[in-house]
Image (cartoon, rainbow, N blue to C red; front, top):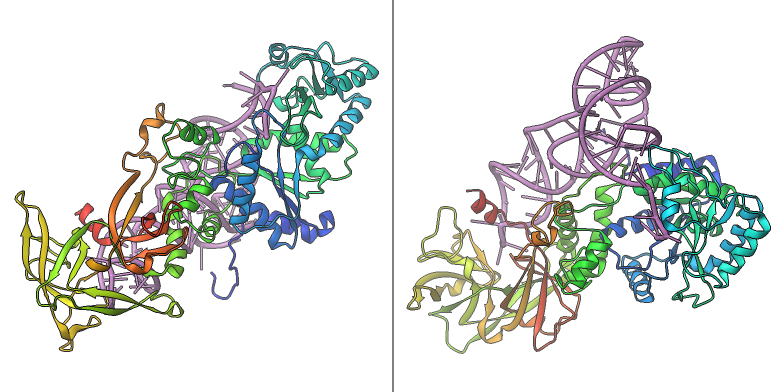
Length: 559
RNA sequence: UGCCCGGUCGUCUAACGGCAGGACGGUGGUCUUUGGAACCAUCGAUGGAGGUUCGAAUCCUUCCCGGGCAACCA
């Protein structure tokens, strides 16, 4: 099938639809998109999908993508969120052609409203909130017209002006589009364009006392920016008819088109802003950037790279199936792919067991040559100190090992990575029977990890020299929720995984002493870890980004 | 139940009337100074019923299932 076809980039229906437009010369072959977040929360990996679509597609077609804050609801929005959003978009590696705000267009939008009123296509309505709902009818019954539907144009214009000036209290009036109270599409039953809100806006201050609704502001903002392709999620499908209505009935002079795609759902987490906010507010997590959160700031803190996120977006594709749930294993895979290629290998022990090499000279230290990354020869080598006393992983010793256990046990010989072969000759226990120290002997001729006589060992262990070890706090993260899909659970909060975070007091090799925050490493045989922002040279902190695939652990579990 | 949208391996996603393919996952293996990585093999799907057609995942009918729409949210 793909013998000699060069279909490298997996396509999707949005890419094809743009391609069709470009080929047909629609919009003169121009491609302009926009990413339109509301600054009322932090971006999560679902937004990353939208960012990847909007910025990525524009990039692919030599077009432009704007960042536009959909700031039409001053009661919920804040500059703190806007700043965080900008940071996250840039972190993902994208640059906006223009930085805009729906609030930049409040003036233009107001003029469009006057235009609509003059065309008898909009009116000022005095119905109460409850009456508006009643008059709208139901999904099965048509609505009925507002008594203000035929209000004279001059009166509408006057009322609009006075609404804007703050002469009326909130809820006294609304501005509505005059469309069709019997439309089978509820969105078309004279939707609201403006509501009175006498509150300051984070950008326009107290210049306005009325604020536009999403449906009214969005399409026209797209038109003002000359957007060609306006991508949004499936729940706005019914809004498209209204989007077109506003664009077609005003003199915006542009014809952007809206297309919908399925939002991302990821297993073992929640994605709604409301729930994310609740997790933060109620203290179920440490903050928006808690490494267990699906927020971009949380993923970043955990050590997930932007490259991995973009690769993930490409892997999951884009479609219109609305009940999909992507297995988080897909994300883990993308993370490992990236980090395997780039993260330097180091040695760290997170559950230490002391080992003494009985026949190694006391007080002696030697520098062992270690490769930094077998996947990348250019990463070079480093020296790691070795001595008579070492820490190994407690898991790497068993007094009574099962079949196929290749690690250390009484009488067994293993390799200490890059160093020597050692054989276990002694097991020390405390009064409770817990192993507290191992005695081993080493083969001095096996320096570097290979015996001159050609004998092989099955197991290779990572280690850290006791006198050179740097203590480190190692935070192990796991899925925030136990259920694959916690969202529909009545008591979703009680599904939080009690083991979603665990802190270990471990030791790392001295080369890590000055590792800067955010830097990623592979702790050999354990996983990928990133330096936490809390880390300081005298108290190192690492976050586990993702574990290594572990076929031994898997075999144990299934066996 | 009115309108709109959607159902393809366990999961995500291709196939645009012409051999149902890829990725993740699973399983088995090769290799290995990470039980990592890499490599190989393998498991595995068109919601049901009719119809159109030489030929249907694709077109039509119907049924079933899922999602969205009746905020002065976006």
